[in-house]
Length: 220
Length: 220
Image 1 (cartoon, each protein chain N blue to C red):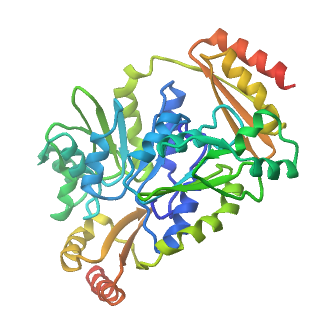
Image 2: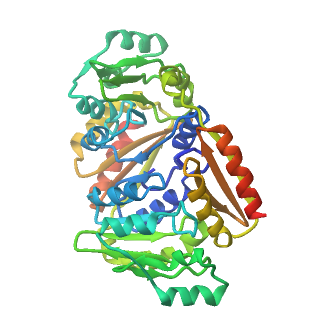
Image 3: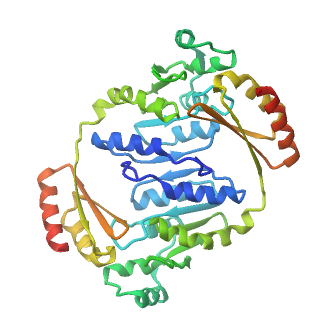
């Protein structure tokens, strides 16, 4: 991904799933396969919830387990229960056993379509979900993540879109006036081809409706 | 992008361009339209070179100019020369004039296909390139970036791929042995569908050739 060979479809898929449930995504980060980089990125983050994908396989470039353990001052332990489960599906070579090593404080997440288990680990400050990078495996495990996250999804926000064929520059003064008039409504403006998509969102449904009505009138 | 509406094709495109020229990409970051977030992300970065796309338009959610200026302790100044150039192409409304405001220490980068100019700004520690988010505009300006970057692209590295239909778990011991034998060759293992792609790279061409030969023999 850092070489541009692969599009980050996991990040968009996860962002969409969470947005649909009224959760705001604050940051998307792609970092190299490096233990210190993984652990420091977690430690330096201000977020309550972190979702990581990738680096759970059996090969030497798979460093996520160790990086996450380090971030929590934890150590990896061999989970014999997970190893047994892996063996039920197919033979597990000596080197592939690392996939069953999780941070001691982690709770495993089942992977119904692949061998590497995921896990969730947390302390008082944050909760980190760790899922495989293979999109089918990540997606198959995401319902589990959503179940854990349910309590964070309460603050529903409302969204409206206005589409216009006018260039952004010609409606900039209306949009500036808008942010002064409706400070509680978040505005984003996204040119795509010949159209501009204006996204308005708010926790207050009736304020959003007033805002949409006002802006439509200004732009027409 | 943080809501999963849009894939980050700019990041992959840029990463590919730089990788092809032997430059390593260290981190890809997607952050919200927020002045403090933009400036602190720049200040906290350890990198020599930062390339930013997006947030150069005329609407109130376009905050990149201000964020970058803040990061360098700089202020925005109206560049009358750029304003004149913009006016040559089409009428510039009062609110759209912000697009000609750049940090005082910035050097503008021409945008041949849109109105928002880009810029480059640097101090002794780092160099930040700022390009529009619209992919056609960003791409049209990227040759300019590459010209500035030429001096960083000297350290060519060599790359080889090995493809195998064996599952990752079954070749993990060979890969572990590989990293012990060839410490100067970087290894990445990427499962895709039924195949595993093993990427090997090194600054030392003949060492890479020895490594490829050895690993092919082990895996077959």
